Image (tube, rainbow, N blue to C red):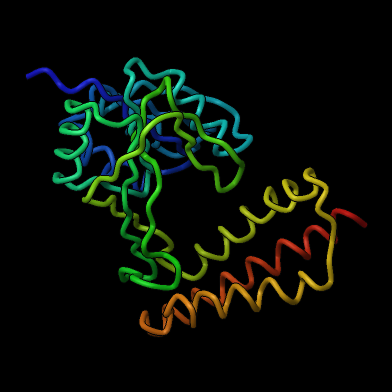
Amino acid sequence: MKKPEVSVTIVTLNEEKNLTKCLESVKDWAGEIIVVDSGSTDKTVQIAKRFGAKVYVRDFDNFANQKNFASKKATFEWIFSIDADEVAPKELGKEVIDAIKKDEFDGYLIPRRNIILGAEIKHTRWNPDKHIWLWKKSKGKLHGGVHGEVGVQGKVGTLTTGKIHYQYETIDEFLQMVNSYTNPEAKERLDRGVGFSYFKLFFDPAYSFLGRFIYKKGFLDGWRGFALSYLRAIYKLAIWVKIWEKQR
């Protein structure tokens, strides 16, 4: 049976732990799979090729550029973007196929369920978590750096079934993310002319914690909600300290 004309795009770096599960979830309905790797030293590339993916190697500069490069390599008009640590349930695959057939919109918001520290986080600003992950190549493009978003010129619809995102099994993994993500985010702010601020150094972490734990009801996620709210406050603190370091 002919598969739908949709290109599934994935950017990778040392994802052998997650990639098989991700590819298994899309292989039955993906018209093609595009993997853009930024220099994996594990079995990531071998796993991708085993699933018949078209693999390209590109030095990493930021996520937006990496994912836009993947889209440019796609054969089909429709792009479905998924991360290596995510899976697409069968119901989502069916919705994607139906959306492409109907062709009513130029892009689709898709919800995402986040599994962090061994449980689904239903509050703490991790839910609702909707972004455009299905779009027409000619109508959409990622913008921004660390937290890039897809901008679509046209009508945007919403799918019902969410991707499942398996993030940060341990605190150590979260702290590794904090260190790697805050470096480019500090640079992005400096490039925009945003300088160090003592007010922001103290205000941003406190606002982040209270916003997540109180306003977004992180307390309903139990100890995980408290820990994640606190860790995101550290993330904000790290950005401003790194801006101060870079300005010295």
